[in-house]
Image (tube, protein in one colour):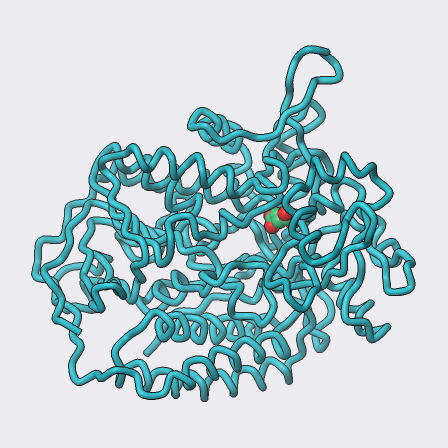
Length: 539
Ligand code: SIN
């Protein structure tokens, strides 16, 4: 591997190309040059996989108060109400802009005014009103399409595909004088087999979540917690990582990897049945299938454990076939590929890791504890989701906070760092000798989290996970320093770090709240209401 060339200099460096990264880039490009670094293809993002939609107060029977109430209720006492109000309040304006950019959401004839069109709002668990804007069952892909189209015609944005953020560069780390600030990042360009230095006046982490830390997930392969790991290594605080949301309905099929069955299927009347065909959700919650996700996922887990079944079934066959195919064309097509006709057959489903509710601590403008470092979208912890995210609030948060981060920077106009920036040092590192170390450790981390840090936890399981992850971390660190970096090794290093942080946060919380359910402390503890679990690097 060659020594790095001189730094590539930009005003803004954005890591990640989902709704958060693209929204920020488009707005910030008004004021300066933006580098948009993405580790795969520009359309490979969690956003692109989002089926359900984007929640916002839109319908005539809905109000800000109702959406706020539903969000706070799902968040189980840990949301920050000021943040909830602010993000939800700004939703309609930001979504309007998204539509002006060309994003199309489904509409229908307004029953009260024949001949007029209105948005077709769907419903998901925890929502007391229909308020989810959607594009069939591929909403994220439609938003991503519209944003990427706009980015393509923006000359101030340079997109670097297949580039992988390695670590952030801070002035404290390079020993520069003055108060600490983030001034760029080292980025692996696997094609050129070198680590390049991107320098910028502000760095924006928009890297999404960490579903791949679990053996079973609804997330794409890219979801390896890179932003949380990088921010933590740089010294930023992270919070509430114990709140991993398990989506109740991931398709259970030996050949189907990570395929989500949208909560909107339940929103439109789908019911959950055990292997004997009987419904069970009404035994767990009066809202039955439309209870918040933590409740539904735990109920499914408990039914599977009680009956020894490998899965439960989601049944929407009572709806007309035309309705099902029209509302859920992607799910219909994909299930048919695996021999399941959802208009006639119940869908075998299991819960799987879906969303990281905690993350890098930020304010509403995405500012982290390190000046110059921003985090937006799933990577961030703003206080909106609390202990359990309300369905479809995440695209909304990403959109609003990315816009605010850009506006903050357009006002602040931070000066670029002009001091010397050390290039990446390869030192004595050689090519990796045994790639089996990487694949074995990947697998072990994901199984450890699934078995010991899943939907139902105990103190003993968490301690066991802590110990195993500690050993794995040591091995990975040694491997990292001895061998040249590859994207697989970087992802392994990041999932190991995030796994440790999830366990660390879970061990800090001696209660059950929202998505964190611990059999040794089965009730919420009022002393922990409104208390975040925070981790900061000490060594
Ligand atoms: C879904 O379609 O069920 C996912 C929506 C979300 O996670 O917000």
